[in-house]
Image 1: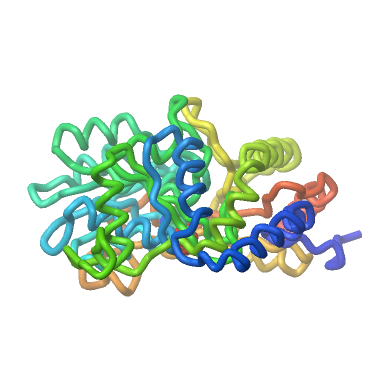
Image 2 (image 1 turned 180 degrees about the horizontal axis):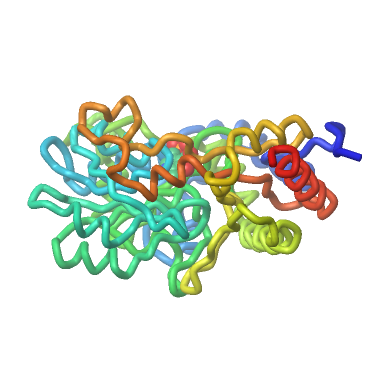
Length: 380
Ligand SMILES: Cc1ncc(COP(=O)(O)O)c(C=O)c1O
């Protein structure tokens, strides 16, 4: 008997965490409303301290989103027109968008095909006299290979801006993601491991001078209200979002461990399927499984057909990301073409993310595994 749609599994279900935390979240929101301190109030300052401590750094600056965290960091590093910044070709568009928005040029490097993170040897090939920074992305919740990237940065005097939108709580050789480069850019987008109920972001940094610069940049370039020293932005973390995130933060470690347990369950139930490769975790990292992303061997199956088949059985899956950034229309003027960054191109064709979130049931995982086997059998 084939599986039926009434067993629907969404790619992400936040209702479970909201059910447990509903009262505390509503009280926190109510307190902000009663206080009338809506902009840069006590919750933003407290959350900045809490995230800094969680990441083992001295400074954190709340901003409006993960994208803004990148934009402000790049600006704070003094990067702009005429500069080059090396980014992975396989990531969310915001990583490169932030660079081009400031007038600098994103230079796309290839990825390690096993882990989907920036390939240090590809980065080395892309460095020119105009290179000013490298942005490693800790994709799917696993850190990039930071030591060789940091070595290259030191050798060529480059800034390292870590994109930790997907990796809050992950570690590289024991060090928290985001705390190794000059800046670590966090996103509180609702679907992240630590998500708000709207947009939000934060930048962590070791240098107090950088933190001061970022605080000015997020408020129109002003250190003192109505006195602007430089071109800035309006990019502040919302006080209500900060209050909500503060309710959730104490649960993050546990949620990250739950995701790891789900990943282990997936290994047991789909680890033997021919043509499906499971995520690789390097031994020097802790993976927080923001996504559970498998690779479908494109010589055996069409990934998009599998996704359709899973959807017909009520299992929602996602493709992060179907087009590598060097082949995006918005970057066509940069002159990249198919075949230039083969690992990123292959990944875009083959990756498929399966549902993962704290609280997903064992029965749901086994259902997903059964559906996958049925869909593959139908496609044979
Ligand atoms: C890798 C990566 N970088 C940057 C961002 C941007 O974060 P936000 O959506 O908070 O602007 C995201 C979030 O989707 C992301 O996944």
